[in-house]
Length: 114
Length: 109
Image (cartoon, rainbow over all chains, first blue to last red; front, top):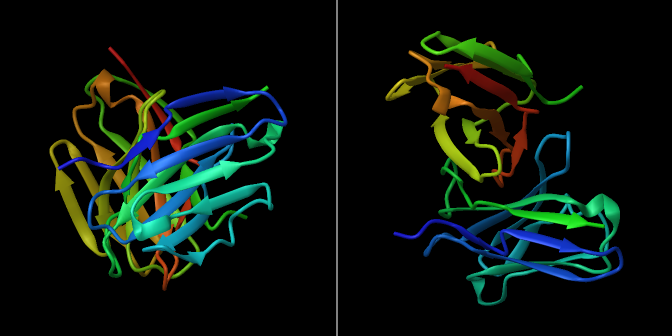
């Protein structure tokens, strides 16, 4: 069975440009989480989908970030316009819909904003 | 103060040594995760545990819920164990994770 996949693996863009990250969760996993690791800091929660609904988006840094999960399958995270401080590694994780379930992480997308 | 504290932040050891990484947390939890991140790589879930001890190969994870403390042990360490080890705890209700800062482990041949 395929694990969580993310695309692209790396993205280098200039400040002010737009980037869209994609996450494909494990099939059947209703929970989907986005996390981010900024250089030198711990990984931080961004938001949580249950199927296509945003359950918790308290970690989204500002309105330049837009996450979607149309149809409750894959999710996209768009950053528009990108700023230097958005650089980091963006991780996606998925889990089954019940408590205490292990989250499976994707390989991450390394975003560099120049 | 971070809700999840790890120690040490960096650890260098010789191949074969017994390794211990500690994690303390200040919030009530349902379970605790130990994760591994290799340089340039993604994150791999090593353990999720809510009580007692779990073992997988040379890795052992223990947790003491009353003391809000968990340890990750590596026996007969090997250079391929070099990675960042991260503990993470979920929030009740939605299971979003709060992460420790990680422990960078380097095993020297």
